[in-house]
Amino acid sequence: MARHGKKYLQVKQKVDSNRKYPLEEAVSLAIATHYTKFDESVDVAVKLGVDPRKADQNIRGSVVLPHGTGKTQRVLALAKGEKAKEAQDAGADYVGAEDMIEKIQKEGWLDFDKVVATPDMMALVGRIGRILGPRGLMPNAKTGTVTMDIAKAVSDIKAGKVDFRVDRAGVIHAPIGRVSFGEEKLKENFAAFAETILRLKPSTAKGAYVKSLAISNTMGPGIRMDTSEIKAAAAA
Image 1 (cartoon, helix red, strand yellow):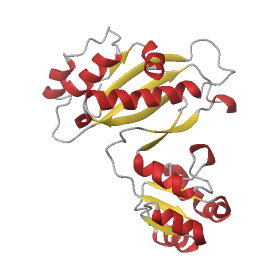
Image 2 (cartoon, rainbow, N blue to C red):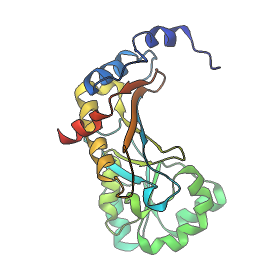
Image 3 (cartoon, helix red, strand yellow):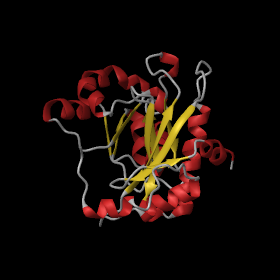
Image 4 (cartoon, helix red, strand yellow):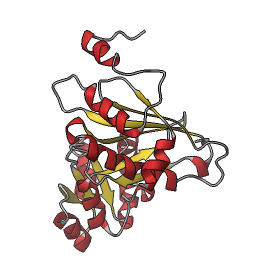
């Protein structure tokens, strides 16, 4: 059994583990249970009534949070010619083609957080799939990171785009900001995330779509939420 420190146990007393909180109280608690010196991330976990083994229920998507994530993402853009210039003008930290792929292959260079690419580059990107894939860095059309509109892809990431994917247990984990954002910004980010999750509901999913919902800061306890808050936030 995991052992927790005194500070964790103190803040955990603020949370009623038997209660399902409304959004406003849950966000307030996520802030109130912050006890470390660093600006912790505030994260959401949603258990969905889907079967990830089925291709049409293996939910994957992205959302641009209105207030960002509080983290600056280093973006590598793989493109040539005019598209490379567009990516650079949009704020990509690194831009290139074969040279960047060779740098990753031969030097093990991975000083970036996201990779975007134009479709014509994907045959070359396949060479480093075994390096990028396990790290969650492989560009993918479903998350908008393989596109001809590479400037928008870069801009969205810089603005606070979050990619997510359901895991084997049917759970989606996603950050919605930092403790320092305050309640209003966190609630607005949650609303954007909620709307996206509902929009991605597969028509083949049976029964309750959102089975459980929780929010927490990085080091704090989980705070269970009423699942109806997803629909309420999305409709707001």
